[in-house]
Structures are given as structure tokens and as C-alpha cells.
Length: 588
Image 1 (cartoon, rainbow, N blue to C red):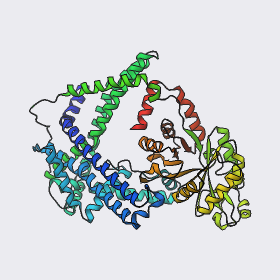
Image 2 (tube, rainbow, N blue to C red; image 1 turned 90 degrees about the horizontal axis):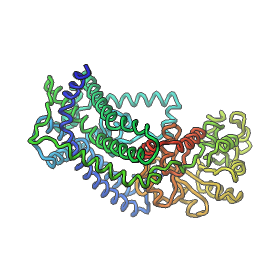
Image 3 (tube, helix red, strand yellow; image 1 turned 90 degrees about the vertical axis):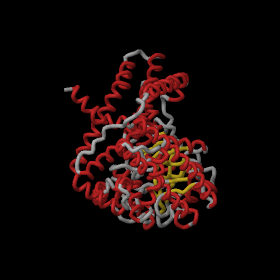
Image 4 (cartoon, helix red, strand yellow; image 1 turned 120 degrees about the horizontal axis):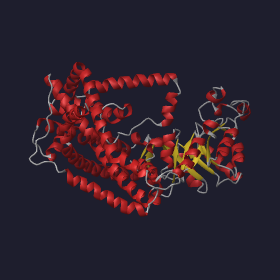
């Protein structure tokens, strides 16, 4: 039975694995082309931003994109880039798949050119909608293929948490997802019809919907079988090449031999994983193309494989992997602790005073963070009608104290009558006094009153209590942070951003706060090169916390402080294998 199953896997996957060298060659060439384009585009963007007096565009400066000629040109270039990505990331892959399946002899250069020229059919309203769906919607809902530039696109955590916390918003988001899913499924073969059959985008859409309607059951079946067999094959390869050797290594006593073997096999596993990831989407498109031909002709279109004049020489590839692994051993063994540090330097900062373990934005919450061992406490301040500063995150006190009024609509006396689980709303001064010489206070200038007056007043209070070294003023509004940094350089500042482009690291502040999905190793390194520190917000899940504790970030804002503290201590007990795997995960 086992031999029959193995034979079936080889029969189904065999023709596709024969295409791997062609796919790899295509991926290398197109990735280089896209990298060159991105490099040039970045230089153009920087020149346009510099001419407008900016170094980056952030979420607090989005109007710039539609009110200046530089911004409008950036938007147009950005949209143009999406078409270029579709050309190289999808269209040319479909052309390649057609050539491999139908045994058409075409050079790689001609394949890429055909995919690029086919973009001309997308330059219309329908085509723009298709490109926007592929680039923006598909990666968010997780259905179908998307372009590599936006495959990591996500809904920011602070927005998704609001959606999850509301029944109405959750229902509306579910409806939206179902609508977009149905649109995506109905148009699965729209690019195939446009490229292979030469149809207009409108006719290709009609054809795709007809094919999906008539064959959706078989499409699901074929996808499940294909993905299952791919996964089984990868698991088998991982067990043989990685898990078994690494398990055997754990039986050895800790020392030079086990460390050398760990470096070697983890390097091999990483290379194989990278090559696998590089070929995953092209293989899937190859399968979709075979199904497209099958559904069009109404009977099985068999893909029997690729006829080659010479057999594939896998030995050279294996030798290259082994050489790279040996070089890695030579380099990493002598600098192991530098490459894979045992301890973390990331500071834990409690969100909204004490996180989930204390009352939100209260003195007791601050005390909870201090007792848990947090380095800092992040709080939110807003101005009252009579000019005092009190703590509150939302636009009103409805959620925390049951009062639907805004802070700016109330006097301090009225605010003090409110109760947060039996505790009064504190003033900023009270929080400054409570945190002094104990815990660093990261104060977010929040709400409608986050303006220049708030900046001046907050700085004045910090100086009054001589807490310049124990406070950091942060905000989502860059103009306010820029004002503080320019006029009060002695005060530590931080700008929070969840979406930006340009040289974000060069923004005028001391800290840059990155939403966890955008806090990549490259982004962190770029910020450090500018002499600034990195805050990651708001990482609450254990896996996410562990990930960022293994990065070079400077601070981690979280609601689950005690969990983060425990993870920090646990990192010091890791094996060499765990240290390598944890670090590699932060890079890829």
C-alpha cells in the first residue's frame, strides 16, 4: 500500500517537479528585474519627497499624496508599479506555464516579454480593478495568488482588534470577506483567458465565470489533492533532510561537534526552504493552467512532463548547497553568540499603563506594570475643557467609565467623578509622580486635542518634575512630534506609524514605533543606522512576543506584560538549535 501511494505521488507530481529547473531559472531572472525596478523607483520617490521638503510619507501625512504634484506623481508611479509586478509576477508565469504544458519552445526572454506586453490589456477600468484586487484584496483575504510586493499586506492589529471587539463590525467584515471571496473565485481564470486565449479583460472575465460555475467542485478537489501531495512530499523531505539529523544531534552532548552539525543542517534546511518558497506560487499557477486547459476542452488535459535533450543535473545543485553550508559553519561557529545571541535586549513596555493585568490608564495599572518588571508604561493623555490633562485612550469615556462625553467636553472636576472599576481617572501629573525614578513613561499625545498646545504643556510638566530622562512623548501625528523634537531636543520623542514609505528612518524623532507586521528586520536595521530606536506595538500573542524578543528592536509594547517577562527569561535556556531557528525566523 505504501509503495502504491508513493507511486501515485510520483505520477501526479512528476511532471511538475520536472519543471522546477525552468521555474527556478525564471524566478531568478524576474526577481532580479523587479529588484532593479524597485531600486530605481525608490530613488525616484526619494527625489520627489526631497523636492517637497519631506523624507517620508506616513499615515499622518497621507493628504500630501493628493494635494501636491509630487504626491500625485508618486501615486501614479505606485499604480504603474502594480501593473509591472502583475506582468512579471503573474502574467509571465502564466506564459511560462502555457509553454511548459503545451511544449511550446520559447526562450525565457520571449516569455518575459510576452507577459509584460500582455499588461496592455489591463490598462482600462476593468483591468485596474483586477490589478487592485490581486495586489490589495487577495493577500488580505488569503485566497488566490497575489504579487510578491504586497503578499504580506495585512489589516493593522489596532484596527483588527476594534473589528473583533464589535459584533456589528465583525459581521460587516465577514460579509465583505465573503463578497470578495466570491469575486475572486469567479475570476480565477481571468488572466489565463486574457493571456492564453488573447481575450479582452471583459471577455476573459465572462469565460472565467462560466468555467468556474461549471467546474467548481472539480477545482476544489484538484486543489486539495495537489496541495496535499505537495505538503506530504515536503514533510517527507524535511523529515529525512532536517528533522532526523537534528533529532540525532540533540542526543549528543553540548559542545563543538553538536554546534557544528547544528549549523550545517540548519543552513541546509534554510536553503531548501528558500528554494521551495521561491517555486511554490509558480507551481500552483502551473497546476491552474493545466486545469484551465482541461475545463476549456471538457476533458482531462494531461500534463506528461517536459522533454529534454539532456537529463537534469541535480548533483551540481546539491554540491552548491553543501559548499554554502560548509562556509556557513566556518563563519558562524567562531561568531555564534554574535549571530545568535542567547539573551534579549528588548525592553518590555506595558500598553495603556498596565496592559491586561491592570486597569486601563490608571495609577494601579502603572503599579501593576512596575511590579511585573516592565521597563516602561505607555499611557494616553487628552486635554479637558479647562486645560488639564487626563488619561484616556478612546474618543469618549464610554468604554472605560460609561460616560459618552469626550475629555475636551468635560472639566477636570467632572472627569474626576468618573470611575474605572472603582478607580478615578488620573491626571498626567499624577502619573508622572507615580512613575518617577521607577518606570519610563511613554506618553501618547492622543485624540482631538493632540496639538502644539498639548506638546508645549506636556514638555512643561516633564521639566517641572525633572523627568526628561524618564519620559518619552509619542504620537501618531508626526507634525506634533516633529515640533517637539525641533523645539525641545532635550525631550525624548517617538513617532508611531503603521504605514509609510520613503526614508522613514530619517524622520525627526528619537524612537520610531512600528506596528508588528511592518517591524521587519530590514526596517529595524534601517532605523538603527539613522541612530534611532525602535518600538514594536502591540504584540500580545506568545509567538509574536517571542519573535520580536529575538529581534534587534529596542522596546516591545504589549498588553500581556507578565507573559513577555516570562518569555524573556525562557530565552536564556534555549539550545543552539532553538537560537538559530528563532533568529532565522526574524529574518525571513
